[in-house]
Image (cartoon, rainbow, N blue to C red; front, side, top):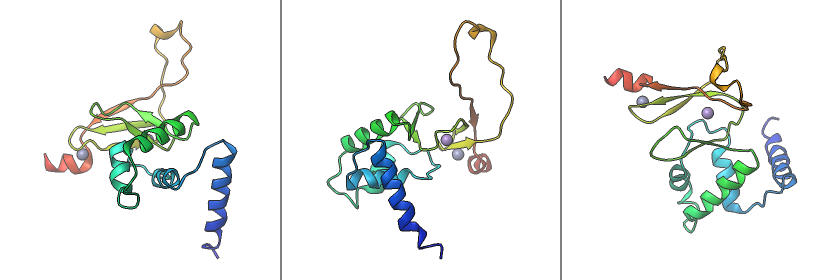
Length: 144
Ligand code: ZN
Ligand code: MN
């Protein structure tokens, strides 16, 4: 049965977190679980409001500290696409983004397209890059 695998998968995950030296508290675990498979690119505030009912004593500092650790461990990427607040992405594989100017939604762009490293950078060692599209998401386009 499929459901019987869930505790096993969870145990495996916990083991993985331990193996990379991640100290697990119930609050940290809740943050990890909230981020898991989350494609909304949440801000620290989003995480806080999602979990504050379950953990009334949780502080912003806990969220920021946890995010910092997760970034250091390579489990989360920090996105500087939203000028008003940092947003976080648990999907750390190379992919691009679309930012909606109407609602602030950040969508993943997974399709591959060809990119040429510009000549201006020929003296640099380029390690990473990201293309940011912006405009209106389908819902905001509809409202125009
Ligand atoms: Zn929108
Ligand atoms: Mn993303």
